[in-house]
Length: 233
DNA sequence: CCCTGATTCGC
DNA sequence: GCGAATCAGG
Image (cartoon, rainbow, N blue to C red; front, side, top):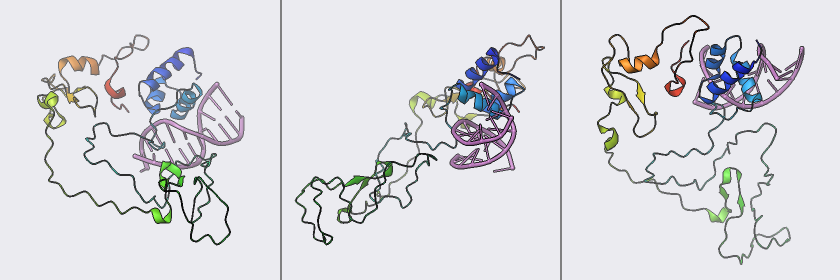
């Protein structure tokens, strides 16, 4: 199989539509999952959430942030870098016991500089470590942050905009479970209409979920499905 | 084990 | 350019 115009277009659409490489490969036919991924990369379509790519900085959007998670004053013993195999971190800072790299007066002294008369009043931060945490001198240790006081946990109340809508817990085999919106969003819910008997969806959504099997050549592309559609295997 | 995408490397 | 083999996280 070769990468014709149409196949590349389909690959691009599905890839950007969130389909997995396996689904795309199966849909295209004649190619493997690896071929799809390789082609996608060669097309420059990269940058989709990958399981192997450590999630960098993804703040939880719905977090009320009642207590801001304080940065650890003590750096983790093992600084987990997302191991760039060919580009070691640029800091080759020696882990010397008395780092004073950024001090305004790096005056060279004799070997016995135990006293270190510091005229610098405010800046105690001496260097920046991997991950952006601030290295501190031995005397700069802050008091350990006390754990948050225990609080009584109160069951979450559904937001008003979803209060009347069909939630996951409301699903049964008589109501349409077609998802409305996207999981994780505050108003995500399910259709909730009466199902088309024998199907998991209402009549309307059955029309979107299923279509008659037409002979090859007469197929029409299916309507876009939520989340790239159900896994068909 | 299964899945995922990323990367490498011989062709 | 292609894709199997391999890697590595979930």
